[in-house]
Length: 455
Image (tube, rainbow, N blue to C red):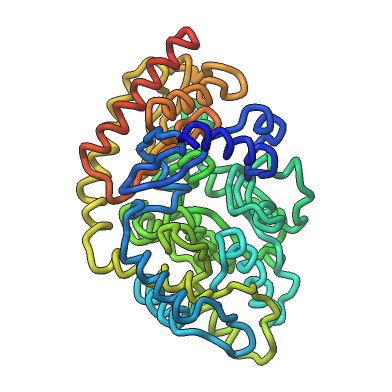
C-alpha cells in the first residue's frame, strides 16, 4: 500500500472511531485532520510527508525537542526492569524516590515534598485536596473557597476546569460551586486605552483583595494562577501585578498556588516562572516538560508551610492515583532533569534564543494587522486587529486568526490560535536560524491573512 493510501485509511479510521480532545466532533467526522507519524529535533512529520517546524513544543511540553536518546534509553531500561508497581500503602520505587529528590533540588528551598500525578489536571485536583486537608487539620474547615482568574486554564477534569476560567468549558459542565474568579491581567484585551500597563496591573491584582473581602477572609483558602497564562493566550502580566498579588496573599493568610505546567522547566528563562516573576507559592503544579512529553507525569511541589501541617497529624490522606509515581514515567523525568541540569540549555535559551525570538517577533508590530506582540522567554503571542488604535478585530468569532493558523500550518509552521492571537512556544533547543524560519513563515501567514480579510 502506498503512502497516500495508508494515510487515507488512517484518516478514515480516525474519523470513524476516535473522539479527540477540544475538537468539534461533527466537523471532524466530516473533514478529518492530520495524522503525525514521526518527529526529529524540532520538526514533526505527517503520514503523507508534510514537514512542520513545531512552534508549540508539542503541547508546551517537548522543550528539548524530539531527539533525546537519553530519555528513550532510560524509559527502555526501566520497562525491562520494573515496568510498573503502585505507590499506595507505603510502597515506592527507586525512580520515583530519585525523581522526588531531584525535583526538590531544582526548586526553591521551601519545597521538600512532592505528590506525583499523571497530568497537570490531576495535580490541580490534588491541590484542592491538599488545601482542604491543610485547613481541616488546623481546625478551620470553613476555609475552603478558591479564587482563580477568568480565561485561566488549569486542566480539563471537572475540578480543574472549575479552577480554570474559560467560558466555553464552564458552559458545558456544572463546576464546583466553591471556586470564584477575578479578571485576568490582560492589559491589551481589558484595559482602556488611557490606562498604563502598570496602573492596570495594580488595579486588576487588587480585585483579589476585593473578592476576599466579598467572600470573607475566614472562608477563602487559596488563590491559583499561572505565572503567565499559556493556553489563555500567553498573557504576560504587567510588572506591578505579581508583587501586589503576593502582598495580598501574605497579608490575608491565603495559600498561593502557582500552576507551572506550561511555565516550568525553562520556558520563561528560569527553571520556573515563579522565579522569573519573584513569586513565593505555597504549592506549585508541574507536568508537561518534566518528562519532555515522553511519558505522562505531573505533580505538586508542597512547601514546608503546608507539609509541616500534613506531617504533624496522624490520619490517612485519602487521595491517590493508580499511576502516581509510575516508575517508567519517573525514569523519563529523571532523564529529562539530567539533560537540563548537565547542560546549559535553560541558561543559553534565556541569554541567546529568547532575546532573538522576542526581537524578531517585535518586528511584526509594524505589520498592518498586528495590534500587539507580547512574550517572555521562549513563548509569545501576536494579537491580530483590523485597526491598531481602536483594537477592532479583523473578523467575528476569531475567523481571521483561525485562517492565519491554518495558513501557517500549510506553510510548514505549527502554531496555535487562541481568540484573536497567534501563540507559539518553540523548543529550547531551536537554533537562531530556525527561530528566523518561524518568524518568516508567520510573517507570510500574516500577509495572506491581511489579503484574505481586506486589511
